[in-house]
Length: 400
Image 1 (cartoon, one colour):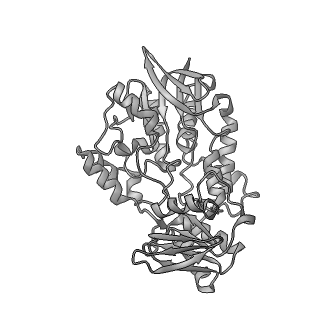
Image 2: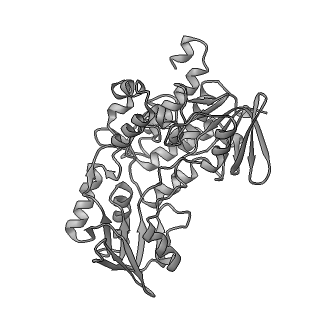
Image 3: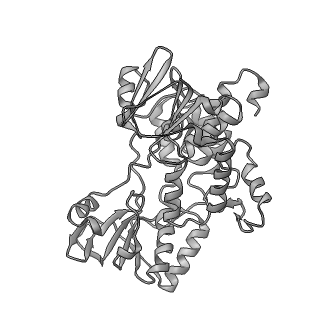
């Protein structure tokens, strides 16, 4: 039996694993990480690579290691390999530097020894242990269970796009679908649906391959924000007042209002504007409501049935549904063990992110306690600290 089981091996799960291992709360042989991907952070790396994101949106102090200066020190030690690894005032790390730092860290803690590739389908608490059943029938037993489930599998597909997928599945895809983006099969012109950071990165990348044949179709003006929520949410300035709110409907409303959904940072906007000025990227301010599919072309229409344009390929950069992640997995234990949930369906947890006996959450599932940063790298670090520090029995440990 393992001491800790973490379901989810993305940013949230690997950050917690690193904190548990490096603070001595668990050995690698006492830890199990369950994820359907073959390697840690596989989905994160794939999706960041698809849109060719050169730099992270978050600053250099946000990473998966325990010490805040870990990534900065890593870049400094490898400055000959990473001469442009940190960008701008906030020292945002390059994607390559961030990923290499993660790789080095995963090797350091030997995380592969704890890796169990598989998909969890049922959870059960028996006496003093949790069991996780995988799709192949294998059961994993552990004293403590952490749900590090994200919304990454809940792709946002507008109704008209679902209709198009049924009629012409080769003419539409979500950029974060498991289906690989094959440039050889794409027929221009291309419509990119969305006005946020993903759409912008993707448009820049696609315009390198299909200059003057890429159009961003968006419902709102470009929203320019350095981060996806105010930095005050990273510390007590906003968190203290937020945690005093006892009405979880109000907490949900604050989270909703605090997030800069569909936004992009200034430097990316400048790059985008330059491409638009040169005519390599076009922009259309419309909300797509209907389609007409022909053999090799797709016609898009707005709510007044005005034609927006005709395209050979439609790519969705519409983000994710905000509904409860992993609902089919966790709904049975919510009912069986009477776990507390808010009206929105998300967990109501303790200050140390404990949801039930020896049951913890991190990431999106922890956002009603942590606020709008919960899903981010910074949220992963804070969540890991909250859980790890709650296990400590002395002040020295809590100060780590």
